[in-house]
View 1: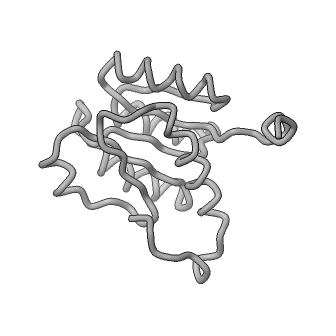
View 2: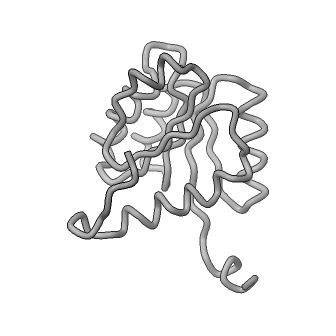
Length: 141
């Protein structure tokens, strides 16, 4: 079983989180699990990173971000640049969750979350994008 993980590349995660403590904990936990993690603190930085052409397998964004581009807008703009980019949202504010208009095939993880449980969800999102659209089933947002 160890050989599987050694030969498989873990997804590259773009983590967009403006709360330093949450960001540090999540980034460290994901790195410990073998993920490559790029951290930015707002939507503008995230868009710049995406536009740079750097490798990203999953966009993991807080819904509530400073600077005029919230997580929902970021996901929509990111999908225009990279139409097959998997997106996972997070938020601790119920009112924002209820009004969220997520991009197709995305997931939502409420705060507080266990950062060690995110790995399997990221793997699922990456695997799901490889399934032809006609074969996909309901379950994701």
